[in-house]
Length: 304
Length: 255
Image (cartoon, rainbow over all chains, first blue to last red; front, side, top):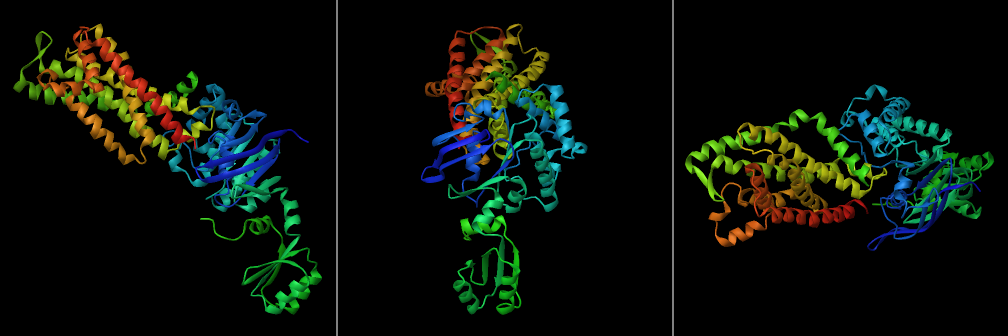
């Protein structure tokens, strides 16, 4: 067993009647990227806010670097970097000042802070915007600067709350590339997301949460194999005899009314058989994804 | 604790230094406007005002009051509107809270910065008033530490409101319920002695009355008997509102 960087034992957070996090336990190993997935209101943000001391625990024990968050918030915060969901860049300051002023909160000496800030802006390909202000920049640039700022204290653990929400595909890939890079350098990363593609691409291990509880945890590939299989056969406007056939064959499927999802390890033979016999059109076989797992476990109802 | 407060204060100073040419103007121009309107315009009608055992010119009467008002306004404005913008719209405090800084350090740093704004404004204004020979030295130099004490008291009160208002328009309430009445009825533009007794009692409850009392004494170079009481009242004001501000802001920021 590798050393745990975060240990949560029966952590709980309530707001009046509302239970945001409901006796959750997990451990995150050092190194690698850990993802917390879940629909809106699942308790992802609350969970990570408890880790960086924004939300005191109602009950349970939460240890980061082996230190209890309820008693060692300052020592823990000195060793982590946080990218919050909101844009918290300081619009009163230039980009480089955003980083150096932030460095000062960590008591980093000015010459080192400037050197580090320039290095990080280069890493984020933003060194030509050092003297711009946050309001003049696009969403993607802002997110990269927030990321650069979170790295100013050379954190051992980087916490990101929905790092690419609201970004265009180009910017999203830019952020992913940087995070990949950091992970390869051995940094521990904890992120929340509701983009399955992001979780599959970046995370070594994930948990899926819903309504304050953990539904599953494991490696994305294992979870897909375990809950869905290898492939998904997606059939639009399925005929009644197809439904009967699938039921008789005892296949695992999900009926969405106008669409049928058949999960399993379909060899070409079965696929050809079904498509030839039941659906000459509108029959697609694709590789199972984390999104299938997610929707299967958390349901398809809207969370609003 | 202490370096954290300094870091927050330094952040505000960095921003101030970028805009210092604009930030300098109000404390420089405002007293000149007031001195022109009240000192020159009104003093012809009023002549002299009874103060202590003697009489002083109306200009000499209102000049220290202008200093006191300036101390109150700078800190109160900074820790209401300006702090609220940083907290609510700019999320500056949220970003700070993800660093080793604690909520207590952030809020104290903000209040100390508000008091610093009062000190800066007082120093600039003193230059103008000295030019008109309205400040007696060396006692006048004590106006600087007094500006900090007064700024801290009014800033704490402002920060308390920042901790409880749900949106920025609500600041109109403390401004017209507290600031404007104090501005007018704290022995600023007319002596309290001419007021009915009940109004005099009411005025002693206002912190600005005591601040004006102190600035007058220091500007004229005499330490009045009321000094300990006045200073004590400002201190009491800080002792009540500073912990209240911390409590309310902690509740607001940590969820």
